[in-house]
Image (cartoon, rainbow, N blue to C red; front, side):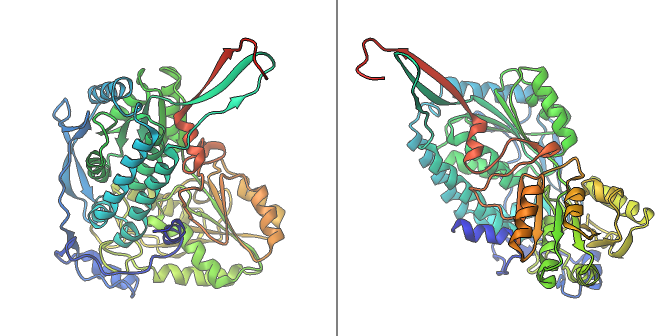
Length: 538
């Protein structure tokens, strides 16, 4: 599937296709579906669907083998639709991180992976991409079951993008090279781009598969070995696709996966003296801890992709119907659990009332329910902690005298579903306009002048992304250059092509992922200077 097609799937509401009968089987009716129908008449959810995908791997992956945690401990991973246990997964801690790092170090220092030709490494990644496509529906079903995102989103957008990303990095593997540098004197100077060594990687729960690809893909293409810690909420899909990587020919010890918790396994990885680099995606608060641990140990470099509070700016010349739909997608996509969500919707005062009326109506039409059901736009939040956090911010908005236009409460009595929520009359100093809510809560603010909205949009500790909706190229150019954000989407949003770099300004992170820029995270540059004797030329 072409990159443009995949990006399109991630940048608008997904077209529908029948769910594979081999993946889902019907289960019991729940109270949620009855409530979902009352909230959105388009939500045709009659009963919960039980996926038939087999869970084959719940252990740690160390040195090419699936093994129990050293402690023997496990922890439950839950179905966000019900809060019930899907499986018990090995709980790794510091001892398991030590085992994984030792395996990765041996694989890097003694194993075949860094010594393979770049073309051979490329072939492994291409075979892996083929296997992803072969197992697309199973992978998507497992992602939806463990995470709660709509199955159609996973099957039509995210799993194909997983394959696309690995093909992209497979293409880069044999195109990484240094330079020949002229020097003042009789010297031959060349630079070598060498793999950095053992890379520690910590991925989040909101996009487990895509974050796996963003980190593992470039690290492997550059010839590194990896210890990856999964999010404790969503450990299953990384283990599933890791088995496919082994089938594709990845040597033992090159990729090691430890499931566990941040204060134990994550901290041990970030502070490990034999890890050469750390990459982390998650909250800004945790990112600070990761960077501190990395600095206090062996000063390992960090790539950090952190939080956001992205502005979405609707200008007075906008086509309101299109702007409403795009702003809705920018916020509510993935249950609002997106670091770059357009969570501050700035609307010009001349079109504010019309936009608000239509935005409220669109939120009320949003289909919420079992994410395995065809046509569902919004599933449950990831877990009880995130569910309660979102409800707390909704209460804060009401208490701050923002106008609650719709939603504002849980949906049903089981699972972690929240009504699509819209606030108007939001002020910049309200918590709902300052903090990253990470949920289905749209805040709509009014602006008058371009200079004013630039200042207000930039008045945040974050700088991950921004959206601009306008027909005027001069307005677009003014805003894209003035907004302090790592990505600015103009008349689109959430376009995640494999070649487009992603990362933030300010407290939204350090470094870039995806594209050619991501390779720099996993390479060292070495200068080699050789004296020349009686050179014919310099």
